[in-house]
Length: 267
Image: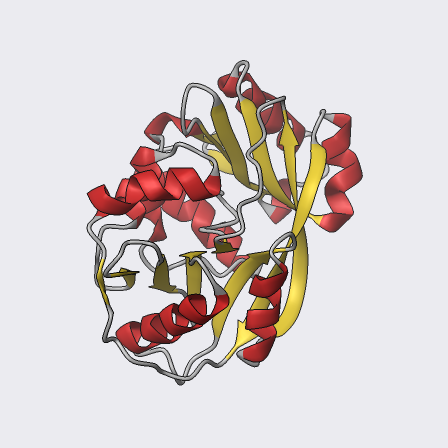
């Protein structure tokens, strides 16, 4: 895909209710410009998928969508196969709807854990103690916590822009990103050494983005019980769950500091 093609795929995703961020396209594309695929029939784009090669050992599959006018004709399966070929021998992760677990299992993916999306309004908090992150300072910490080396993706994701901000504490032990979406805001990733710091960070992010009167979502991994309890304490409602699955032997191990993933599209 070109960057324009990727924006088209995100428009398809928006029509399906995926609610992408307002400035997602450029940040996502930077992760692996050759890893976004689009299938065409003549002049008509019909299917899209992302096969992001974060590192020589790991990749992430997402943005898997077929235009409604072309479903049921095998185009989705063709672009899936093309994406899997791009990964080579890498371990591959994905966040898929729970109902499709059996289909992903047929391609060799195994369930690691679920991710629960929480949604609601969050009160503003104090910005004191938190400041804009320097991407160079936190990309390496992201790799330690997420278990994935993905410098191109995170360097772009953590770069401040009009509708996306990343805050960190003075010790660089906690940081998170908030971005404005078509509807409300999303927080992710969200990393913190404990629940109190995570809560303070969430409220600071809401303040930074002036999002206290809008809906805010967090995608919390099921293995982090405090993260799920925090979302409930904040008054957020669990709205749906996805399955984090991996194919390959080098799947990342869950980390207790991961209170929220970055995106379901790129991991």
